[in-house]
Every structure is written in structure tokens, then in C-alpha cells.
Length: 115
Figure 1 (spheres, rainbow, N blue to C red):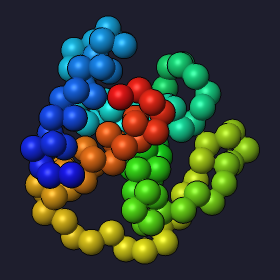
Figure 2: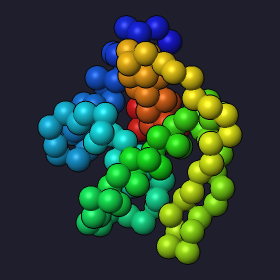
Figure 3: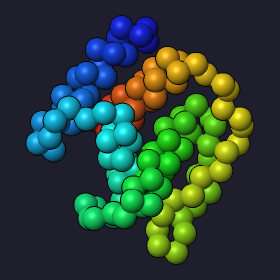
Figure 4: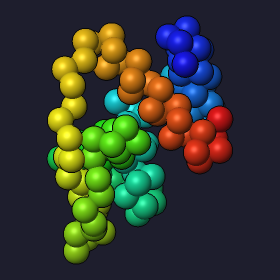
């Protein structure tokens, strides 16, 4: 996908999430948080600041696993997924990082058939 196509689909995804959750257009952090909650699978609840950071980490690992960078190791006693880095992530520019994260998030929500 080209940058223009990624950005178009990204805006579409933001609109769908905003409508579904009755919120303002979400930024990447909010979308990562939602992916983390989905991957955790415990349903909606109140999370501590540390748990929110962990959820965003889970989302990053889940998304980058599609590119072969992470592999799911398993779940801990509380049911939280743990990932291991299987190959180093290249030093992408900020613009490349943004486009990659957007395209991976788009693919994630397409897998869930939300877009």
C-alpha cells in the first residue's frame, strides 16, 4: 500500500472507532490501547496507568508479530500475553514508523472485519 492509501484507510479506521466508541477521533495511542484490550481479552474494565502502558506494549508486539519481529510466548497466571523479540526491528525513520504502525493497525482491524 502506498502512503496516500494508508492515510486514507487510517482516517476511515479512526472514524469507525470514534463512531463505535462515541469518542473524538482517536490517535495512535488510543488505537494501540484498544488493540491491547482486545488482545488481552478480559473485556472492558478500568486499568491502572502501568496496565495501560502494558496494553500498548502488547498491541505493539501483536502488530509487529505480523512482520515476524515478535512471537507469542504464552500467557501468565493473570492471562496477560507475553511476547519475545525474535529478530531486531530496523531503525525506521519517524515517518516510516508511523506508516508501518498505521498499516499494521489497519490490517489488524481488517482481520477482525471492522473495516
